Image (cartoon, rainbow, N blue to C red; front, side, top):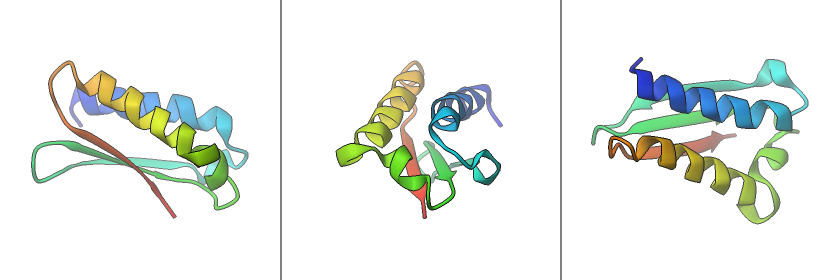
Length: 84
C-alpha cells in the first residue's frame, strides 16, 4: 500500500473510530481505481452508520473533504464511501 494511501486510511480511521460504538465492526479498506485514484470503503455496524453519516450527511462530507485535502498534495483523486 503506498504511503499516501496509508495516510488517508489512517486519517479516516482516526476520525471514524471515536464516533462509533462497535469498534470491532469497523473495517476500512482501500483500493486503486481505474483512473489511478484511491477508493476508501468504510464498513461499520448498522447501528453506527447514522453517526458516521451525521445530520444531513455533514460528517461523511467532512471525512471526504479531509481525505481529498490530504491527497491534493499529489493531485490524486479520492473517493470515500460508507458501505452498508
